[in-house]
Every structure is written in structure tokens, then in C-alpha cells.
Length: 63
Image (cartoon, rainbow, N blue to C red; front, side):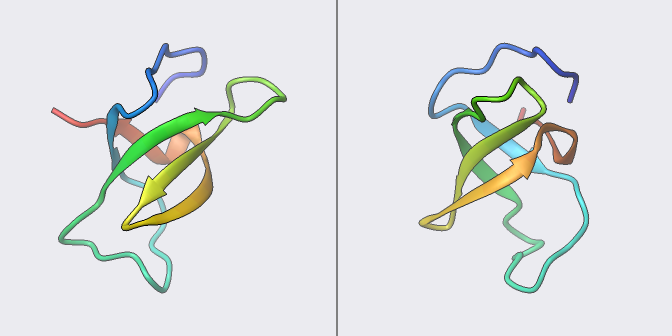
């Protein structure tokens, strides 16, 4: 996703980045929580009840 995309808290995103150990590929959806304080390159999301810090490049808007 492009930097400076306007997202609202709770908006649904789809993870498209590199896989990690606890990623359930059949359920790649997460909720947007907020941007990092240092710009729009990183964000906080909720994934299966856990809060994660990821790059905006690793997600796209869920349809």
C-alpha cells in the first residue's frame, strides 16, 4: 500500500508480506490500529488478538 494512505482505526487490511511463524495464511486479515509516530511507513495492527507492528508495504486494503 502507498505511504500516506488514509486509514481509519478498525479498517480491515490483508497481509501480503513475508510469512512468519504464527501467520495463518488462510486468514491473512488484520485490523488497523494506528500509524507509528514517525510518519506513515509503519503501523500497528491487530491480528488474531495480538498487536503487531508492521510496515505499510506488507498490507493492502481488504475488499
